[in-house]
Length: 120
Image 1 (spheres, helix red, strand yellow):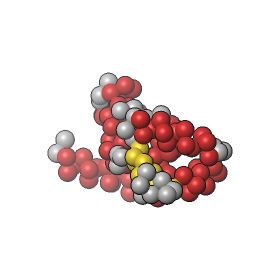
Image 2 (cartoon, rainbow, N blue to C red):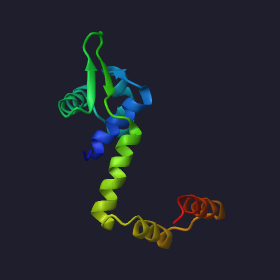
Image 3 (tube, one colour):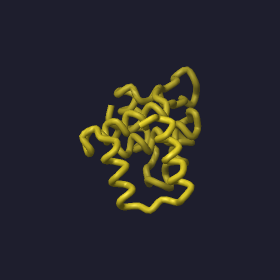
Image 4 (cartoon, helix red, strand yellow):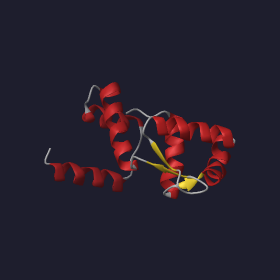
């Protein structure tokens, strides 16, 4: 499932708090987004309908939680990006980054170690 930038923002707040009530989420999200209570509630409700958020309605106030873990979402996003932009070629992606951005000697050594461990 591809997440919108705003869904990433809401999920980020939920991952940071490991679940929270609406007021807490508004306080976390407002400085970055400027969203008011109604906007945050709208996103949470829509994301619940998509299966991204669960709402514990047995508590008062309700507690909102991400239904997906951060690592799974990041993995899906990486695969989607790699497929869309680089036709699935991780080598092309890495080469493009290395051509455009300098890396430190430590990062280079770590990259070599990772490649050696992968036996490529």
